[in-house]
Length: 193
Image (tube, rainbow, N blue to C red; front, side, top):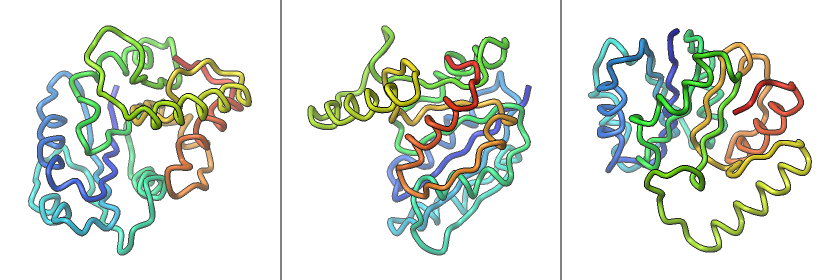
């Protein structure tokens, strides 16, 4: 199976090169990388322009800041893999975790996988108290409307079978992408993990 990795970027000068190198260093996957810069003004664009690899399929540069959802929509047009993962550029999520996220998709147990910053025995990033409370409320609301049982609806690590993701019409351009994709996945009655 081939993996398409979407990397939306906005002002990640300190981490963008490191995250791209980490993704490139994963050898056990056939992959393509699509980087979408959402009009960064901190030098991220220049770093991206200098990065070269035959695994970087496409570099997209927005002419104005449109938001994470818009960046993902821009990248979706170019994916050719069987599975898509969204990799935020801020190093909150480590590409060495791909195996955990992707194995339910690769072995047919799931069509969609949502990561979680709150489950598992691995290291966890410290979140601000009110961010955690807000996330809990949004996840609870999302679960009540979608009849899912997620622990972290706002998590950046989401992986999809490409066919499923391409069937969904996305409207949200900013961070509304997270609840929108969750609600639309729930309506499709996919195998979620």
